[in-house]
Length: 212
Image 1 (tube, rainbow, N blue to C red):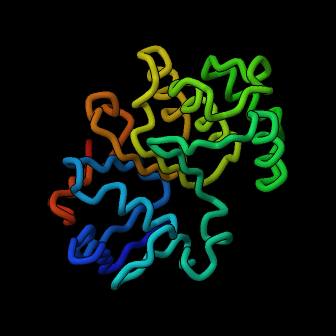
Image 2 (spheres, rainbow, N blue to C red; image 1 turned 60 degrees about the vertical axis):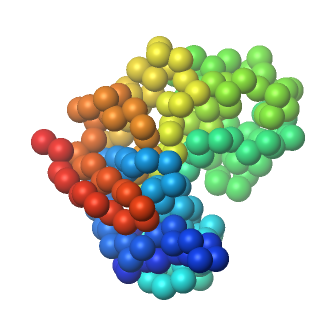
């Protein structure tokens, strides 16, 4: 599904990723952990084609996201740690997503309800004015409504209250057959939901273990 080969990324003289080799297989649920600055978010952004590597490559289902980003990311749903300050209303966002991703707005509403987010009551509100938890729920609802084969989350539960975290875990538990890649400091919350833990430190992968 996702193949990372000899990936190195530098920002000036600083090495953010140092010769990373990883392969995320179909159906794997992988958790990436590490201290701030270890390279976790840089790795995720490199997978999404946001960064041009100095050396090495990323392929998603055999496609290089730098050469054909639209095709490579067609089957990836991504939820960032910090939602962008989008000024569109939720109604406008739903319209954009349903047209660009060819999904039904009903699906977004269904997942919003499952996450206990009242989408219809907030349709006329600008996205950037929502609370952190509401933004997170809305973006997660969109991600699941797209029904992609690969899910990527950067600290998906950071802005969620305890109940919403449990609901999110239920969604993940029901995502059989999907490949999921997480960045999270809340390792205990992922217990029983992941089958692989990857630890990064100082731009390198220092541990890559299967979870039984």
